Image 1 (tube, one colour):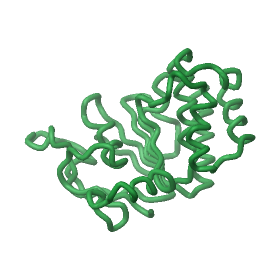
Image 2 (cartoon, rainbow, N blue to C red):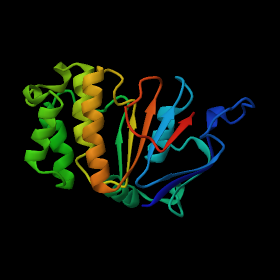
Image 3 (tube, rainbow, N blue to C red):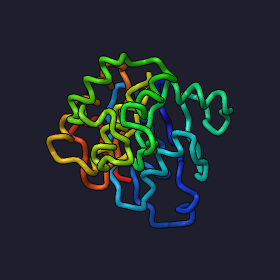
Image 4 (cartoon, helix red, strand yellow):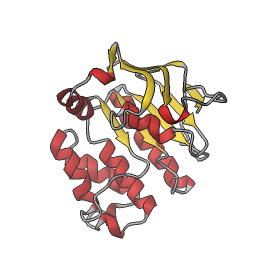
Length: 214
């Protein structure tokens, strides 16, 4: 996948509004590999909806979204499984971790499906993110900031052409935000991928190629 293209896309709930001022909605917009994008938004303007539409989780939008030249509405279940396994990764705002599993088990659950990262690499990320001592702690007993770091590691345990991260540092201090940004950039560059990060005020400190206002 080389590009993700939005053509006059807009959440159905906003479709009748005449006051939409956005760099994304109702525009002809492309996200391309090897580029970094920041999507800044106010709460309630469709930031997480955008991620859900691109990931195929929700379809309540008007307009069209393409992966290269293919309208994503035409993709069947088998195609979506392949795309989410090899081409598209998403760090959800609400994280979607399993609280009854440990931090490491949550990561391994993804990595066993893909076989993409070595155990040594995963353990190195836990250490760099300051949660090495939390590997065997149930996620439900961890703070939200600690869970965000676990979710980031999980999102990197697969090949991807594009990585979407939805408010990934909302509960992190500046030091951990910087470490997370560095780690993320290393993997994005290694894979030659595109990155789309969202923010409602606290942005990842990255050299963005384009900054968009939702």
